[in-house]
Image (cartoon, rainbow, N blue to C red; front, side, top):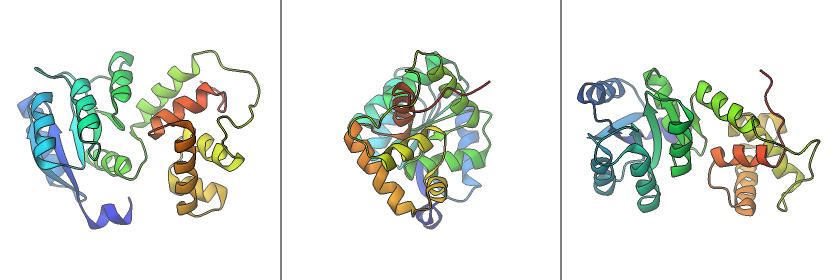
Length: 226
């Protein structure tokens, strides 16, 4: 958790159409440091309205809700209120749920068996620029990406990336956070952030989930063994 995260609680809106689940999440998060629940929504339409009204840091978003589902609400929030991040919190981990949510702009994805501390970690991860993916979701994403055809053998750095930027990209795809990348490369976290900003600018990537897909698509990372 970053120094900023420790000093200032993340302001969170919880969106879930099941009253018991929604109130349970709000109560659970209220017992934990590092987050402040500022609103709760019963559907995607209300979630979008609360974001416009309250400007929270993060929305914990269920997917299957009436009036406006979580994917559409995520798309609208990210387009209209880019200062608010979205972490999906859902029962479903299938491809038809996972990939539309990430494509819509969700930066995190957890299933509802996640504990309170895992939810708080995901919230602060997306605020610090990392992906807030549970280990099982990250494995599912990597397995899916490894299914497609990929060029054989190592590749030269694509899209004008430097060797160091490419190294950072590969480490992102391997699931390392900024501090771990800095330790591996023997540089400061500030240097890592500079490399990430540069490679995102050169490639047009917006977040770490896109960076993982990009690294696999360019053949920079071998498929996981399993």
